[in-house]
Length: 488
Ligand code: NDP
Image 1 (tube, rainbow, N blue to C red):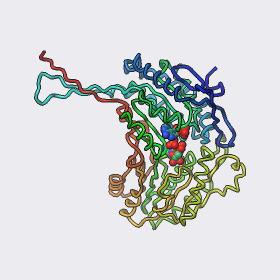
Image 2: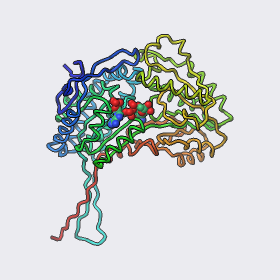
Image 3: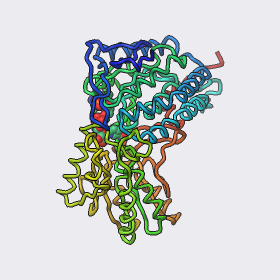
Image 4: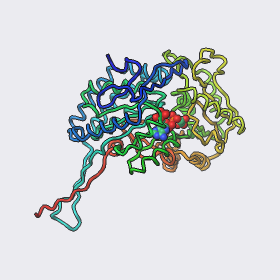
């Protein structure tokens, strides 16, 4: 039997599926109904230690010495198995995260190509030879080497795709990993882990420990056997992890929050800009770090933009995520839904006007789960808390601007810097904006699209380091300089 079908769900340590040391369980929920979906074994600090030691042993005994060709072959086999299992994995993701099945299928179907990409660029990970300025006889070169054990601390919004985008470059570079999925959404990561043995990865190369951030996450990031921590989640948690990792001078990559602007100038292709706004509020119910949550619209077209956006939002089909017609499901958890609703109260207190589409009263079937309808905060300004803090739900602030200088000032007036979108037909203006926006990703006349081949990561409080692209593998390596005097 596949261990993932055998409840309560166990965890993967050193190639064995096992219960937590104290036998403690925690529930995971179906956000569409609020019902318990499964019980999951929780790791103890001792289990974390066992997992890190297993990962280190696997690293020392074989994985660090595998050839690039062997690692690429295993990643490609994993890609093939993933392709075989994609439908099952998509359903697990939909049941546990609440995202519509069409969205789960779409995002997971792209994963084999991502694995293939990392398999393909392994040969690009290499050192240089450097002519020495004053010593002709000395051969001076660099070796790019793996780090050892990498801890991957994961969020709940895209458990499977984000895990794979951390996992693949870490393994490709020759590291082993211990993954801590979010306790809210552990199921798809466990299902993914079940594929590694079949793909042929040696025991201990990939380990998964379940449980809360406060216990399991903390024990993992503080473990002295961990060389690198890669984290995606909230900025406050990321900063705490960075501080914890500093004690052992661990490498840290942080993918944190965002408050991305969609800047629409009056010469823009308006419907295309509205498409991006709709996509960003609806997709995964707005629980997306790069989602544009501040809609900066030039004064002359503001009314037209709002009218078109409202018409589109009123037609959104919110409901059961397992229905292929559904465009928007629930939020991931009761706590997240309550947090978003609390921000709507803050918005009212601050003088913004929340307008929800469609009226939740017209959707009785959404009364049970953790649903929050798409909501626009009209009459917002950029100084409001709701314009400055990451809400992480289907809420966008609509803010006007006069000219390019003001648009840029408002766009950059945030502690975040993950992504920004500009809509204009003026090429010079688009490029000026692209250069001056304080943001790790900028898109012009299209939405922000993360792609496996391009580096992704934030400026300012949105993070440190890059994932995806060649940079993702390089972040998983360290560079050694070797000098060899050939005259002796
Ligand atoms: P967190 O940042 O708290 O959690 C992300 C991961 O870190 C989870 O696995 C969590 O464990 C773990 N974690 C929490 N505390 C620690 C710690 N001290 N040491 C090690 N690991 C830890 O996100 P939340 O799920 O609580 O969401 C809060 C907010 O974060 C959201 O509302 C949103 O604003 C933002 N967020 C941003 C994401 C992004 O993609 N940028 C993704 C998700 C959230 P566990 O949750 O299992 O206890």
